[in-house]
Image (tube, helix red, strand yellow):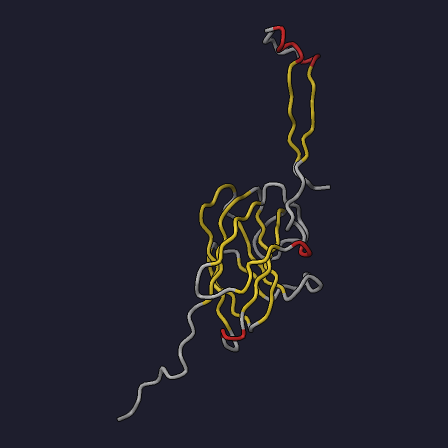
Length: 171
């Protein structure tokens, strides 16, 4: 198991106000934190149907484990999300992502998959803090990972579509 483990220690002599090192009386208690619910693709958290308005989630990689090897950038801690691009977005939609409120590692990557079964082959991968994925309408899995513990806000949105009557009219 690759779950994060914290060690709590206490000196047995603390109650007697003996603040010596007392290493021979050391008590170690491992504290295990379970991985987040979206640690694996099957537990992906849903952004819902995205639009031109921001849709955001808080990403917490503190106790996440690695479900796949890193393919762009580096990383061992990953979590999964799902989102839907509506048919109204046109045949190809630009899905923008952005991050903010970053703590911990800034070396993060983002991958898009069609589904969990095809998680071995990403249809797109980026290791920038903001960017875009161009995809047809449908439901996708988004995996984000970092090389160390990291927390940040992740937002998705679609670019507004250019209306079909945007051409200049002739007189």
